[in-house]
Image (cartoon, rainbow, N blue to C red; front, side, top):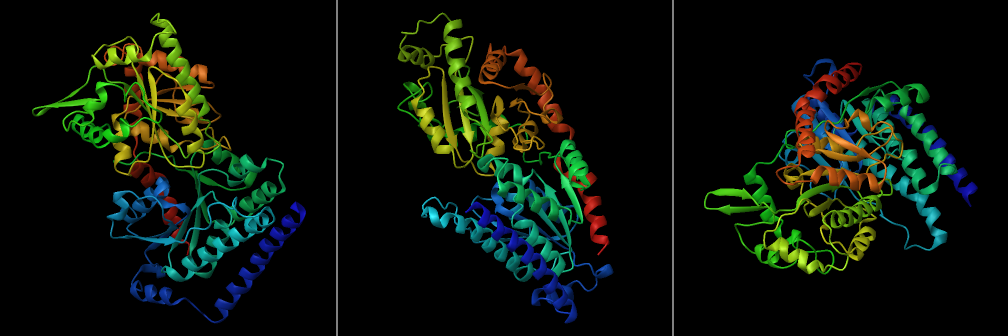
Length: 522
């Protein structure tokens, strides 16, 4: 069965390439263009060199969950003065800056079946081939018919199949340039589920490499990826580091209070029966308009509560390349180690501890509230594990926040945790970039190129095991909130990192010259 599918997929790919050349020749012979292309050409006929003054950003995914491509769209509109069409799937609300920009036009495609697990086993391989074919045809329809002809297509990779071939076709047919923004390698993500030795992974890699070389230019996210593309793929890429836009900044006390009051209901709703946040008199506070778990408003003044928990934030897409088991194990270790340090007997009822907290008692080590944001396939699996944990000083909440509230949460937190390990080992987690933009120090899983972003003992710490993460939590939160000197040092470094560069500056210096040069060739 696998061999037959491999042959069928190879036949499909070779056929599409031959057909694309035939179709391109057909249009050239008849000097044919699509109606919308002719209409745009008439509007932009005054442009020097026949330029249309337009760009198309392509994402075969939820545009609301593709922040880097949203930032590209805003920069193309504001910094390159182009009209921008976005072709993507819907699902999550994009950033307000994107929706409010009159030069940005979003075109949403119909989402394909998210899962074939409900189908009979005999049909699943067929659906595996049918899905990219349908996506390819839909992409081609949008890129060649639904939108006006652009000067340039900017496409996110991964996914590579069928995105790269569809965008390459569209660039041929509409005489446009084609740039790939390499976020990672698609074949390495496929290998997580199929294994590195799978025939499909090998074919996917060939496809990704073959069509990657056809791009007129490439951007990538790290120097390590730039080196890999140059040495082993024959692709010259320009490094465009992720940088936070201006919406990511440290939250003011007023912004924190308003956010926590809005989130009161979610914060005081435990995943289990009760915990160190939802128990006792704390629950009564959730109904007060002028009080949250972290802040209290008295008259015209807002104060941070002295016995508030430390707020730790982690953002995830709940996928296999982020092992949240590490975080859960570290939470259990922190809970037990604090109890041992304070000399508490294992038989001590948690109700006694929680009553002391409600009465305002402060300890050498604080409660920890982990807020985990994001959507993804493994969310329910880990929520089920969280419910079974018996913790006295640690609790978890899972949330999905709006594009406006997420930066405020980062700007209000005390520490960020990143469990991203990278399927290729060559990309960097954008969530950490956003955290630094908010002045939030980070504890991150250590892997090959993470030090391009996280500087140990300067803006964050690295760990390789749950025990190391537990040690770092104890180190950083000892004496919280006023006497945690190690945390204050990292916070200062994170603020310095976040303020040293912003997305608009990075894009102006590295992406804009490349895009302008590529457009000028056509």
